Length: 423
Image (tube, rainbow, N blue to C red; front, side, top):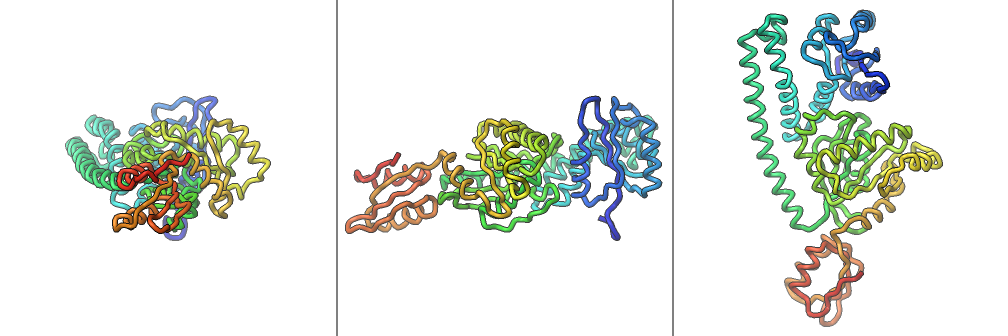
């Protein structure tokens, strides 16, 4: 953001015949980055080797840059280094691709060391993939001084990027080991892990706050959440780990999926995924975003995890219209309708989650009056939904829905004939 107002940008999308443009989402990404979109350009044609768009459209852009005071041009398309260079030379302003724009947004929102390292790794990998072409151009003398590179400096530049990638990858590997230990400790408690996933800006963080009684940042801009937040919460009385995760987006660059793999892997290791979608989106957009989210889940290895579709923001849409949208979706997924903002439908959501969780069983048992029993009771209260507890003369009678691991522990330690599983 510049002093005195947002930096003015133009957005461009070259599409093939029959392909829809993605300018509305690119506009939203620009807003999130703090830019003001003052000009939009779409062109239907095959990619031009020199500029990606046609020379006529380059001239059109050049006029708009001059008249509207445009300070950057953002392309939805991926550009070759030579195309980026040619455009910057003609337009006299910096050129951004969608990937670079998303990296910029991620940098704005990164708060944890892990997120910052992941973003830096993605930036370096992006640069490395283009460095060879930049080096080639610099050595041939076609683009002397391109990004300040001479022929000798270009070699050093390439090696330096590679060295930094290796260094950051090592640091991330150490963080991953630490996160694996945390995950192992969580597993020891026997509580299921539930991940909130879905398209960015669907209301995941608002739902997380409503269920966990937390106050994680909520913003209408994209990618507010980059570092997962995990809390123990009770859903329909059952304690679970609930995790708020990074949002998905159409054509999420592969290098970002790779860089955030450890973070996204958390979703794939869940026992249940709450796939949050914005029910107020038009039917075609809603379907597209759900399909994008499902494809992303598949790509990160989460295709075997049960999914509950959570249609959020129903306060912004007519109920009859919503029912029609749900019919049009024709998705083979269980679903609930909620408004996380106003708390509508959260009881139904919790009951549905309770039905879908497989890691709990309902047991009834009797416990003797011993010091060890006090510790087990504390564990039962922390990790179970207790339906009945009665202190009788010779023992304590308990009926609770608890993790299978805890039930097995109680059966081994205290079973004197009073332990039974309730169907």
